Length: 343
Image (cartoon, rainbow, N blue to C red; front, side, top):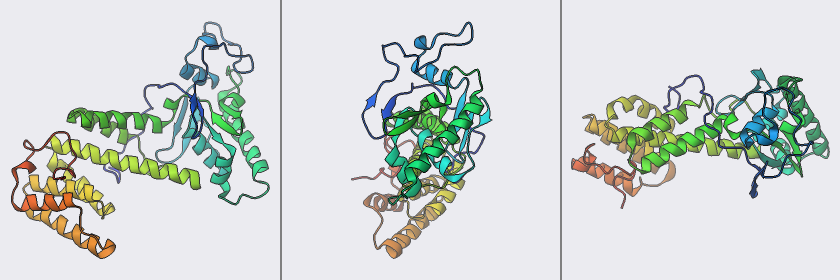
């Protein structure tokens, strides 16, 4: 089990394709490969008999075909990227940052200023642009070597130059973060619909894709730091949702070891503490549940100068009076544990 409470195992391959769109990072989206036929500069003639022409392939199929095989990129943990089973991850720090940022936005143009700020901050050296333009060919050489001489596309078509930026023309499902976000969204939708079994299952599957903190072995600059923070917040939210669903399914006792670890790692997180209180209370450990509240309150007052939120205070009062709403069968089915006693 890792520190977010999800079981640790080898990554599953990212699942269903959702297409690969081409847009500028932070800007409006435009479809690639629309109704018009591709130009010769965009797609090479198919070399192998029996393979469909590029013009008849879907966008995701076409982007995968360019590489001449399977693309797999993992950022939820250590950085890993391969084409046809061959690693394309550079050893130098700055090219790793570039690959990470491009992989997080497949099919979207990452502007040159964003890449330069990621590598050098707000005060890049005068040689920054020229240096960046040497890193891109290094990545393309790794791509080209893994793609092989018979690939229908070229490394320049996969790591493509666009107006004022660069783009990785690969299907979104090639990157583990997009499979994670799809499954996490499915879990969130099921949770809101009151389908706790599906919510717990989808959330668990999403968390299984994580093998540690996002990009744990990459030196992150401003742009990647924001992405890592966003992903870690999403991960913690998915953990909370899975636990909420499990609590609504009556699995409180089996959650206790995980919640003990999570509250220790997040000592000021009221949502996790409220889940721990409910799990302990339903396991016949009312005194321990009340002690969790006492310690949380002391910590918040001493470190932040604030009392626990009204929701957590009302949860504490409900435990003191043995409110029937705390029972598994009596509780509402479509709200979080933290909001059991929301105003």
